[in-house]
Length: 196
Image (cartoon, rainbow, N blue to C red; front, side):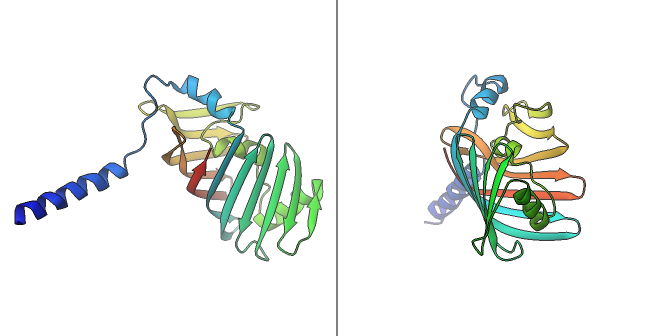
């Protein structure tokens, strides 16, 4: 009886260890093949949490991101001054709806978001960075994990993005934890779930 209990404990330990292993890319899928596939992914959703430190201030918020073609819809729920905000971005066009229902557009929306966050987030590039790829419209410097054929780091548009872990979603390895830094701004994103 003791041996079977020990064997069960060993099996559970091994299985628990297996769950934390990073997903492996499909056989033969090189980064050169995966990059354009991920960059062309135009419909996805993610849920997660974000921690922002900027200009000596900081906050945490829940995050829900829906990408529908060129349109990004991001809901932040948390402090942000008065409880959160909903952002809709298409290219450089931005609309912010505050938790009080106030709707702000264009340059005023960028100014409002920068005032709330402490910086103006690069939303057009973020929709690519959260997928673990560079924005195809700008030059970038990539650090690649050659064994896994995915990014470990990225520098683009003055930002440095570090990818700490990935998870399997829809047959693809997508970021689960990443950190963005630029000057005195640091943004940490923890993804709780992907839908692609």
